Amino acid sequence: MDGGPYGMTLWVVKLGTSLLRGDTAATIEGYASGLAAAMRRGDQVVLVTSGAVGLGCQQLRLPRRPDAVVALQAAAATGQGYLMALYERAMAVHGISVAQVLLTRSDLVDRRRYQNASGTLQQLLAWGVLPVINENDALSSAELRFGDNDTLSALVAAAVGAHQLLLLTDVDRLYSSDPRRNANAQPISDVHHPRDLKQLEAGAGDGGRWGTGGMTTKLAAARIATASGVTVHLADGRDPARLAGLLEGDRGGTVFHPHPEPLGNRRSWLAHVLVPEGELCLDQGACQALLHRGASLLLVGVTAVKGQFEANRPVLLRDPDGQELGRGLCTLNSSQVRQALSVVTDAEASPVVVHRDALVLQDR
Image (cartoon, rainbow, N blue to C red; front, side, top):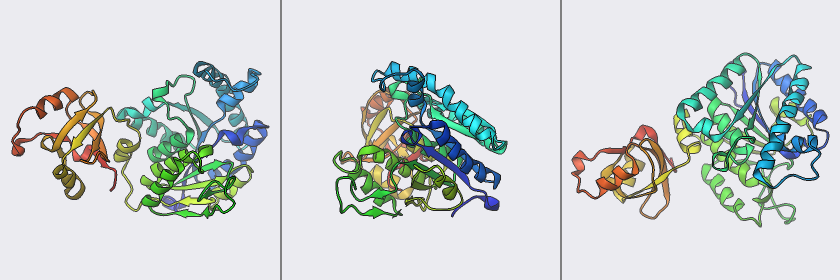
């Protein structure tokens, strides 16, 4: 199993809501044993956990999970402290401190804050502390949410340069179709190529297939993490004792292998954290220059602009067929691009609209 220098492996472990139902305290104690054993061996571990809303509903004795966003946020605020207390108590038995880290997408969208979050997590790991991460559900507005902790765990894995991401869930592996509906569903043990992962994601988008039940978000997490060079394991976590074996080197039910040419930290941030605020439509010449010559995008290659955005904000790049080619930071605001497009520009003097160092392509 791939690891880091001197045999140390940096793990990100994600625990889903379904695993923390029932006797949550006992379940967390079971996971804590495996986490502590790995840390004693010299590995580093970051834990991404769900469960705050469910515990909040228990504490508040609510008859069912609320539907209103404000009520969900209030339940999360109530449950988060209780959740952290359970982790703190469970890890203290093993002499390990924990640190609560609550994140929203806005914490990672800004490049400096992204680097600060990464640095904070790295310092906690260096101190031998277990960072316990959750989305800041109590404060996140809809447009600033990750939407699920699968995505959050993949972004965290990229940010800290993890070697392995464990997505623990209540299924044993990925299947060719929903095994609950199709007795002929075939298990998928390995996913090696980004193209195969893309095809699986396309199939998972069909609500009548195995995209239901959260598999879509796990495939998206696998795409994000493997693109950054992280090996991803989809594994059955219903038995907490199973975690110890996985952290010792057992493989998950489905293993997503890392991209042979992983994105660097900055390009991973561009590709997966930023939400495009507009679009630039490109001609065929510009597409060829970006894809085959490693060029920057010049204004002369832009045919149209969509949306309103300020300078140095993320934009989507589309080819002449309307397909996503990539994304990057536009050096001009949308008004400046529109104004420039109305003027005939000498190709030799065409300004750079997206520099190649602030650009990531869809198909690398």
